[in-house]
Length: 252
Image 1 (cartoon, rainbow, N blue to C red):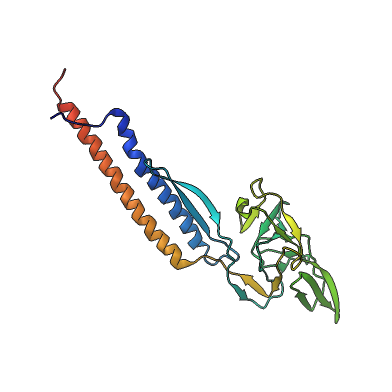
Image 2: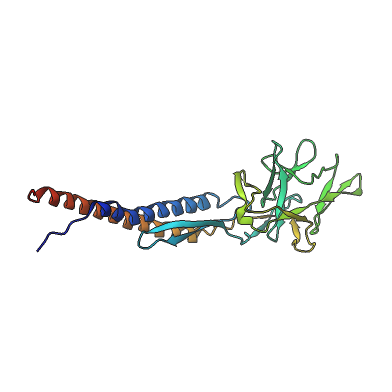
């Protein structure tokens, strides 16, 4: 009975499926780890990975999308803490002059009175709190009023931005996103008008990361890593056996 061993063309192929599976698992672990790290990040939306079956050549990461589900709102008592009830974003200008978008509505007045994020990005269109204001109020329609010397003074109105494809936005750090060709240009409007949901003052949106789900994902990927490593080791043993058989075959 003839001895069957791997051809040269097959030696690389048997590694491909477990290697793609291993890379895919490590990528999903990285995504899960990032979600867990942002468990307490205001307005953070968890990333979700989908894989593509390349049978018989293994798997590959197909796409990574942010969950569109809003996090829970929690009360802070600060009138300039704002939570968006819909799928819109706050538009801000970063300290280096770039336009960015965020779900994190933790705003406060800077030393010039302008509402800014904790990283110094200024809300757009800019809203400047009057000097000596004794109180600030933000309505569900985004209208901002302040009490100065016992009188009510309208400051402006918070504007929101929406995108046809929010998953196309590019993360640029500091809980900020930048517009891309994939996201499309933003449409702007005021809370409570048309497609824009009301705004809630004195509240912030928590991260929507579900910790039990993320731990389950980690365990699943840990199992996938172990299985693919085992398959790679088996493939290596098969190649070693094939090479050994080849050495022992009679010449000619």
